[in-house]
Length: 156
Image (cartoon, rainbow, N blue to C red):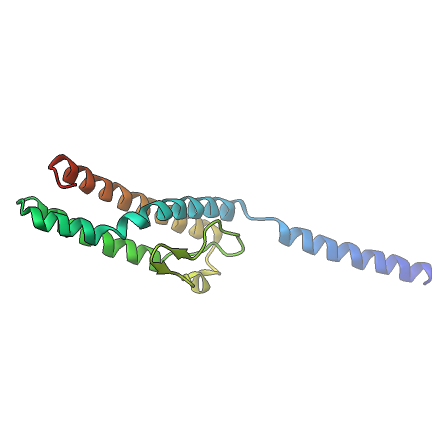
């Protein structure tokens, strides 16, 4: 190899290194989005077994025949429906590894809607993940409130 070929080879190698190192860098907005996503899935993992017990809790409430229990049962139904919709609409952050598996309780999840949102700008992905986290927190709060009300009235 002559000097010219050696220099050309070195420059080509340098360019390849630059390309790979720039693609290895993560966008800070996507990192933030991934943190929101991972936090949401931690809440999901703790809430899901409780949601899976809603039918049993509804049976107990029905047997008690307390006037307030009809509203509690409706709230539990609403929470269960909202939780299932939340899971169905969960979006992965493209290019980010996630810390959850796709088997939760009685449900198995093999896909998320990330395929259609992979080109979403990073700031919108971050905002979407923040909203997803807020939504699961609200579901958790609603569930905790109805369980607390039920416990106070002797429903559990």
